[in-house]
Length: 256
Image (tube, rainbow, N blue to C red; front, side, top):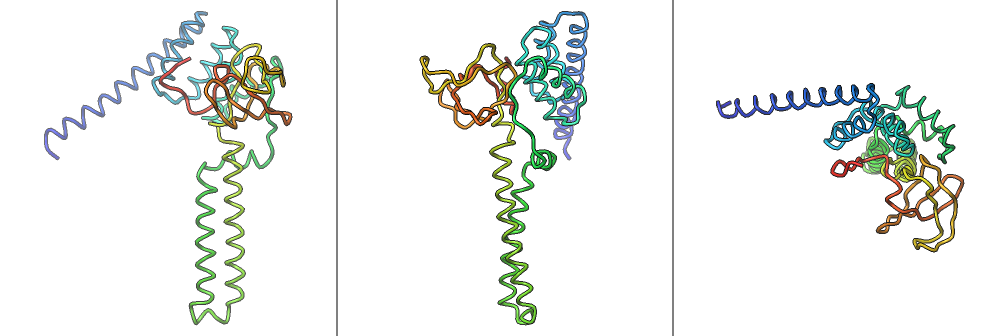
């Protein structure tokens, strides 16, 4: 390694360390502001760190707590849901969300055993399992008819191949279900007050249902300033996009 490359590598490492130290100091200062009771300044400081791309369940939870202190309950639910997304077992987020759920009575999709099981698996697991099962099934079927020494066990290999192909189909359907129902980019939280879902994306449309802050929606389509979404309770309606935020990803360039 040349001297110039060594210096460049050292500079990059040192820069990363300094940025991490700066973020730690900024987080500590934001916590100090929160404990002091200056919740608006603390929220601004937390948001700056989030907008800079810092991924931290503690940061998101503290930002949610600051938003709650400021009376912005929908945003509090949003950031606590983001904290729970990064750390599903976070007890503080779970307890605070239970409190807000009771106080706000927001709408929420029911969680099934399948949802709980899929949520702990890597996002790409169903896709890779489907591909693996598909190719394994095709190879088993091909081997049953092409490899002479396997002919005595042809029926077993054919059965294995068919079972693997069926498994590939099941895994693909599971992946599709996860994409449609559990993808955090499709789950949005109502952050505004006095928000209603309406029958059409027009100002004079009829109300479908009033949505308490913190309510969950499953986005089906976004058309300009309007989003068409599935609502808990087998309902669907149009909601203004400025009143909702997806759980993930974060709009890092536009801190709220």
